[in-house]
Amino acid sequence: MPKIVFTEPGGARREIAAPLGITLMEVARQHGVQGVVAQCGGACACATCHAYIDPAWAARLPPREEMEEAMLETAWEPRDNSRLSCQIHITADLDGLEVAVPQKQGS
Amino acid sequence: MISTILIVGGGQAGAQAIDTLRREGFGGRLVLIGDEPELPYQRPPLSKKYLSGEMAADRLPFRHRSFYEDHRVELKLGRRAARLDAAARQLELEDGETLSYDRLLLCLGAASRRLTCPGAALPGVRYLRALEDVPPIQSACKPGARVVVIGGGYIGLETAATCLKMGCAVTVLEMADRVMNRVVAPCVSEYFALEHRTHGVNVICDMRVTRLDGGDRVEWVTCADGSRHPADLVIVGVGAVATTELARAAGLDCDDGIVVDEYCRTSDAAIYAAGDCTNHPSPRFGRRVRLESVDNAFEQAKSAALNLLGRRMAHDRVPWFWSDQFDNKLLIVGLSQGYDRQVLRGDPAARIFSVCYLKGRELLAVEAVNHSKDYMAARKLIAERAMLDPDKLGHSDLALKEAV
Image 1: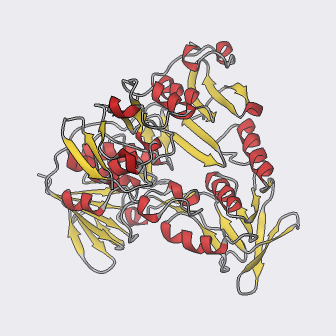
Image 2: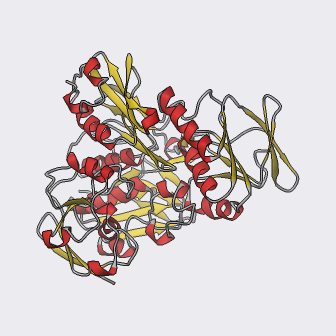
Image 3: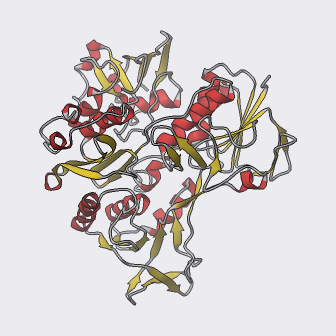
């Protein structure tokens, strides 16, 4: 299983083995990674699973779709490497992915 | 000193309360009592990707079991709370175990409203609310099976769309003159009815079911106009009722839900409540509401947990809701009651539009169809009590937030 490294808002690093096929949001939520709220459970309806992808990795992910783009616009402090973690599916080539959780979720 | 907190109800609200209580430093005994045997899980996929088989069961729980172990949560799942003695601060479970508490949080949820017409108890008549409801529906949803859905609300329509995808022949019978009539504007109802019909769902409105008939199991659904619809499976989605029996029997104030104040307190000082089971004030909208939604369960449980620990925090949020039907996303924010004007933005034929509800110039609610931009902007504007210009609002090429 690929390992994903989350940095929580407080700075703590969590390395989690992620099963293939589920989303980055689900990995974070199942393990209680702090700051990944994910209220809607992956329906792309709430923008509370916002995460910053390590810039070295960001370009290697499938690009944002229109709906994700619109949701991120109003997220708290969006950046070029912002993603909704519910829209990223775990694949074998994501082994080592570094993800930082923002200080806040919501607008 | 609060040393023991009991949470009754293992749904969205119960799971969230655990999270907040531990994150906010509660170090005492924390017990979750739930009548379903599973770890707290998400309900929304039950009518969608879980029903269709696209989503595996292990993706439903909010947290892994290890989360509860790590956070020292005593799980009493598959156990029903039978009696509450508020004076003695004791909760008795059906199997006889008695638990004492310093604070109790009731997250009892809501239950499907039952059909009462003749034949309603026939085998093959199903409701969809809990995980255990899904397998019998799945096994009946064979390609070609005739499914009659009674009720054209969120659950009815989502389930109809899923059953159609599974190869069933689906009929939706709605009593009102349009689908989702209690929650959306007529043009949104019209849009979704058309979507369903285009995909092949037989949507019939103004159609009251009077009886169900069959031998060993349901075979026919009969309506007030005398029409009869053949059915291999009937799915009933006619609303939900707040679960209040435990609270009512203990003498807590109940009135279409457990009555709580903005701090999530019931009429007993040691007992709080959150989620679908509560009747609570909405400071933003100036009235009492009972909401059936993931968002409210989540936010109110968070507020309740903080108030349980003595941090005063009013539960004052703008509610929001969503529904997925075929490839459409309906997003609703705010409460439209009391509006005096509806403004349509965009064109339903373009499959992306929204309906704004105004009271004077104040934005009360927005229903957005495939329009995340308007929806996200509206969340902010409604919370801020923004005043908008109705004429500008009608220009859909102008961003919603610019219509001030």
